[in-house]
Amino acid sequence: MLIRTTSLLLLFTSLAGAVCAGDCWDEKDPVKVTLVVILASEEGNHVDKRLKAVATEIQKLHPHLKSFSIKSQEQRSLKPNEKVSLMCAEKRKVDMVINHGADKDNRVSLKIKPPQMSELEYQSVCGKFLPIVTPCKTAKGETIILAIRVEPCRAP
Image (cartoon, rainbow, N blue to C red; front, side, top):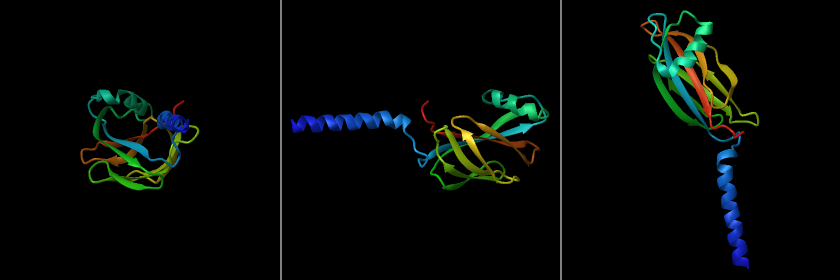
């Protein structure tokens, strides 16, 4: 009887762990951060098909930007309070710190320091990209835009 009880307890514990693996994140867990560097130009009208939705939103506030292309994309897993510097364009970098992982409202708190901007601290909706139009220009006059997404997200 003891063997059966122990076996059932082990089975239940492993099943609980499997169920929890997808839903039970803690605010102290690492966060996967995706940084997409977008270059926007006032010339032409080419929009990378992957950027159509974000370009439409950016153009509402910046109608002079006509062309959008992806310069780079990078993903990192960051623990809370771990600082990282990511390259964006032309030797410029973005400094970033995760304050905490997904909370009960499914928001991640982070601080970023885009090039030529003050440090920004905000809570991001999990799984969505937040575009930040910087005042930085490339040598060709393209505007540098940062799109940041954080994951994992708590299950609804």
